[in-house]
Amino acid sequence: MAQPAVTAPGDEKSDRPPVPGLVDRFGRVATDLRVSLTDRCNLRCGYCMPAEGLVWLPKESVLTDDEVVRLIGIAVTRLGVTEIRFTGGEPLLRPGLVDIVTRVARLEPRPQLSLTTNGIGLDRLAPALRAAGLDRVNVSLDTLRPDRFVALARRDRLDAVLAGLHAADAAGLRPVKLNAVLMRGVNDDEAPELLDFALRHGYELRFIEQMPLDAQHAWRRDAMVTADEILAQLRAVYTLEPDPRHRGAAPAETWLVQGHSTSDGRPARVGVIASVTQPFCGACDRTRLTADGQVRNCLFAQEETDLRGLLRSGADDETIAEAWRGAMWAKRAGHGIDDPTFLQPVRPMSAIGG
Ligand code: SAM
Ligand code: SF4
Image 1 (cartoon, rainbow, N blue to C red):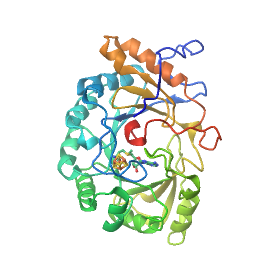
Image 2 (image 1 turned 45 degrees about the horizontal axis):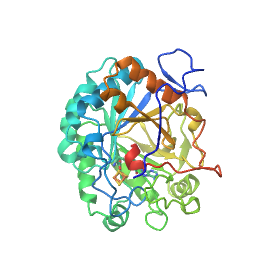
Image 3 (image 1 turned 180 degrees about the vertical axis):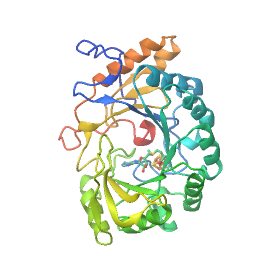
Image 4 (image 1 turned 30 degrees about the vertical axis):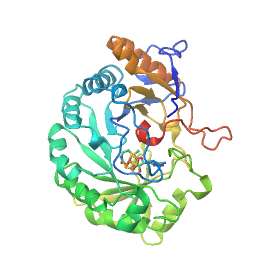
């Protein structure tokens, strides 16, 4: 795989204010860190990977557990990060996951810890992850029909995903959130069915517009199922009311589902992440670390900052923190998908960490 451009640490220092946090030129402050623990996966979702998979990162370039914990420690103790989301690839494939969660949960101030997963293996791991300090999970579930699951993910694993979901809920990794991507001609009519499933089980469902982050570069805007289409499908069956809760930096716009509540009596909600048709870049509070130790200031960034090189050359924590600040200062105002000059990032979603 071609590698993205790597910036030298401190490139963007000149006009940056001397504050400890991860600020950028547009007044945003990143407090939510997405950590990719592996680029590998046991599914092959069509919007993410080709059927044959990808050339995985060589083992020696992937951060060790100690390196991951050290970088997260720098983010939490020096850079003001308050939320950590473990992702991938498929993070449950990372052998040291439970140990990493245990060590990160001991950091002070303790960050909120969540995991985005396809759910396979969660039936076995959920109790240990909960005991280690994980607060909650997002499980990706695009369809409830086994034949469609095979068409979407190219593996016959729907039962394993559902078992994982139930185990996460039983272990108290709540609220369990579901992420669903609709693909034209495959599951584009399934929004109400997925919401019915989520409401019956007390899960919070969010639909995500398909983004140009597939390794095959096959995304086409005119084929994408839009937020408006998803909402129209839902409104044909449910009454949705605007959510009075303040959205803040949350990527999902949420609605209350009239007449439905969660098992603990809160109003039931459904969300849509309209990254393409209604970008929310102005409120973005994210910073990203890839499995091979590169900081990305945006999913769609063309540049990365190499923290692994710094780590392995013996840099101290403040030098690494300063490189991270420089990376975030260079964040662009928006992803520019609608711009004629838009270029899809070199790395696909599975290698960036979704
Ligand atoms: N393997 C885990 C999973 O599937 O949940 C974690 C990594 S996956 C890259 C994270 C999230 O990104 C999933 O919810 C997936 O549906 C979403 N995703 C992947 N490719 C996408 C794309 N091209 N557009 C929108 N969402 C995408
Ligand atoms: Fe794997 Fe997640 Fe990508 Fe699907 S979306 S192929 S489960 S990394």
